[in-house]
Image 1: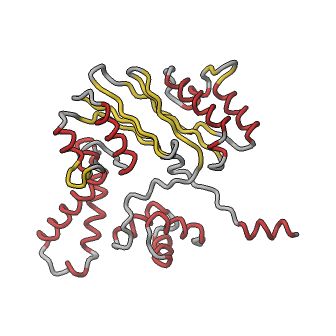
Image 2 (image 1 turned 30 degrees about the vertical axis):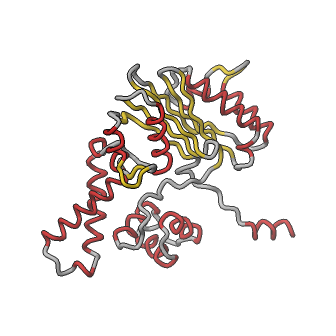
Image 3 (image 1 turned 135 degrees about the vertical axis):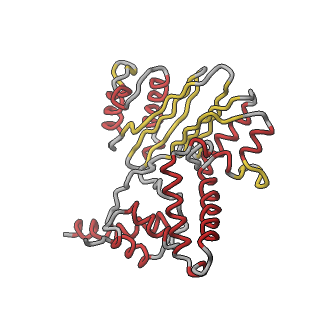
Length: 295
């Protein structure tokens, strides 16, 4: 199949690999970007294992806490300029508070919630008409905690990233906030290894095995040695996915698990929203646009 320049560009942004390597990977994987990422990693070409959550749409997210309930909401717009619009910000506030006070489980249920004199969907449609851009409630999550637990929240860059943690074993709000900041900045996927599905571990083991098998400097090593190298690399890779195994951002000599243990605390759950992650952004061909206007 024909591989487009846009596909090559996307893969380069996700992996940091060279143009020709990206093109070859896409050819080998028949244009499947996710498979191409794994192919590059297996060949030792890509070092960016954590860039698959590509930020591609604009908008803002917000986290709000009320008692033992919290809500994280993301609303998308077409441009970042609109995300700073007062009408957009008011809509975000309306949405997160309406959702927090509800038992909505789906976006459709959330859009049917009463807001002012209409529904949340009416408010989105009205904002779209006034602002002049497509506005969309993309996702939300409602989190509940027990009385002996506390919430930690952090919003980066006005809501480009929102993080929420549930922490038990302490009533120190700063510890919970520090963990929310860790989640926002270091992008863990799981709290600890015990929360990680077996298929995820096996997938990563296969990648590390291919890396070792493709490493010419290890070609003459005994299989037992190679297996040990694979498990060592696997452990390091999985640690980066787990919150408690990550280096604590406020103390580079300490892991988050150690920080929590020193304070008698434990992270029960976390939610992290980065605006637009996983959405493919429209790529404008400005040269073609100018040429079309000149006709």
